Structures are given as structure tokens and as C-alpha cells.
Amino acid sequence: MSRESEDLSAPVPERLPLEPFIERYWDHVRIARGLSRNTLLAYQRDVATFQHYLRDQQVSDVREMSPPLLAGFLDHLHRSGLASSSRARALAAVRSLFRFLKQEGMIAANPTVSLRSTSGARRLPKTLSPEEVARLLDLPSRPLPEDHRDRAMVEVLYAAGVRVSELVSLRVDQCNLDVGYVGITGKGDKQRVVPIGRPAIEALQAYLLVARPALLKQRSSRFVFVSRRGTPLTRQAFWKLLRVRAHRAGIARIPSPHMLRHSFATHLLQRGADLRSVQ
Image 1: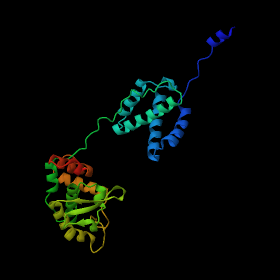
Image 2 (image 1 turned 90 degrees about the vertical axis):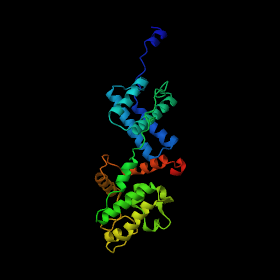
Image 3 (image 1 turned 60 degrees about the vertical axis):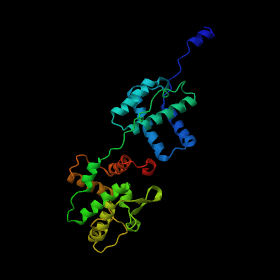
Image 4 (image 1 turned 30 degrees about the horizontal axis):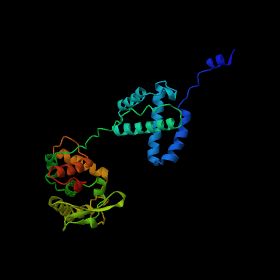
């Protein structure tokens, strides 16, 4: 038999399974891309999900990867109920993997190039209408110190547009009600001064003068909003009290503190405020 006939009868190259290349890919990601630990862990989960999908599709050769197959993976994530942001991150992880395979010469073309991100249409945050906010703020007072505290918290949250974590960590020494502002400690311990309007000032003054001492019962606390045990209120406790107040106000939608914060920003813009100032 001639050498040419031997070449013609040579066996087809063995399959190229994805798994042996995964560890090399993680080494590449850790060294070359410098991703944070959290991002790396998220990518690892996404790639593991992709591997499970390939096994279910009985695909074991990286050369069988195609845009339709990968589009099917994104559709699988969508049908599983994954949020659009999580689907976009999964696509980013798979794209990164295939860029590596292409750079290493393991595949001739990157099949993810033609795929479009699923995060293009970001949903706008939900907000309450001005009428709903008015009903929430104008609830008749009840003869309980907690009710005055809760009203003051909702007033300050809406008036200042602060995060709920910033609200519950507000200290007495950060309140200057004569001038009309509160000092806020934000992310990364960054300090900022936020003005508040007359309704919030009056609600906060009434709470500090009468309701807060009734809750503390001669105990001391540096935090503004406290429970009957004298401890600062938690984010979870505020979410619950906001839900109760919304029910009392006849608001069908259950608002979150984040929704109230976005309502503050939206209503400012609707009233002609400058976008950069709101930001």
C-alpha cells in the first residue's frame, strides 16, 4: 500500500472535549484578566451551567459549537427564569471562554461574535405616583411613639432620597434641623450633606422631642431611629413598617424603600430639577 493511500485512510482527528481546557482558561482569567474574586466565582458558575447545558444537548466537541447552539443556551437561561442582568453576565463569561479558545487555536472561529447581549433593554425602576406618596406621607397619626418614628423615617427617606441603609444609620449629631439638612454616611464611608424640606424637618423634630425619648426610656443612643429596646432600627424592620403604612394608605402596590427613593428622584425631575443635581 502506498504512502498516499495510507494518508487517505488516516483516522479522523479525535474529538476535542471542552473540559480539559477549562482549568487552563481559569488560569488565564486569574493571571491575565485580573477579575475580582466575586466576578471570578460568578463566571465559574456560569461556565458550569453552560457545561451542563452542553451535556444535555449531547455536545462534546468544541468544534460543534455554533451560534444557534449558543442562542439556545441563552433561551434556556431565559426559560429558567434568570434575570436579564444574570443572563448578560453568563453571556459575557461564555464569550470570554470562546475568545480564549480562539486565541489558543482550539477553534477556527468564535461562535459568540454574532450573539447579542440580553441586557440591552434595562427596565426602569418602579416608582410611586405623587398622589400615592402624598397618601403615604399624610396618614393620620396614631398615639404611639412608633407611629411618629415611622412617619419621620418615611418623610426623611423621601425628602432626602437616601438609601435605607443610610437612613437607619443616621446619627443625632448628623442632624442640623435649624439649617435644614442631615449628614449622610454613604458607601465607602463617604460623607455628604443633604437638605430636607419643611415637612421632613417638622416630622423629625416632633419625633426627636417626644417619641424618641419615649422609646429610649432614659437609655442613650447615638442613632436617630430606635426601637423600644433602644437599638437602632434595621433595614428589614423599616421595610415592614413601610409595608404596613402603605396598606393603611390604601396603596395596592407594596412599595420598597428603593422604590420610594426612585420616586423622590423621578418627582424632582418631573418638577424641573436639573438631572446632575438629582444625581
